[in-house]
Image (cartoon, rainbow, N blue to C red; front, side, top):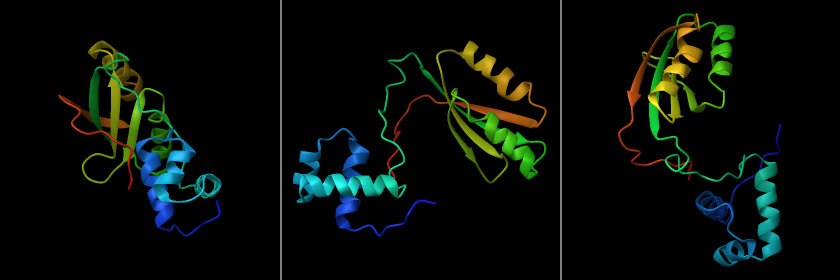
Length: 154
């Protein structure tokens, strides 16, 4: 278990800034929050150690990388016992699935997929859904436009 910490206004501001640009220089962060560079560096390390910062990532443009089709897929499981759901969670955590949510409602899972073509999506349907005996049904929604995508929490 990661040690817990109480966040103050400086920590919240640092988290907001890092969400926008995790490559922002320490000097710039320090000037923005009116703390020393060393203090900001220590605070960021504590935020990492406490699990508030899970990863520092680059947000990529899927279109420029050839992943031009975004699909939302609702999946309904046939069996919902814990072991069966854990297998599905594992199956839906592969690199081809950008996001996977275990949800309430008619569906059990909501997946976000990025693919270069509908033929690649058909291959994924066969791999993830058609060949899986615990997938009762799935429904696909094709995204026409990515209006807003973010990883921001604050």
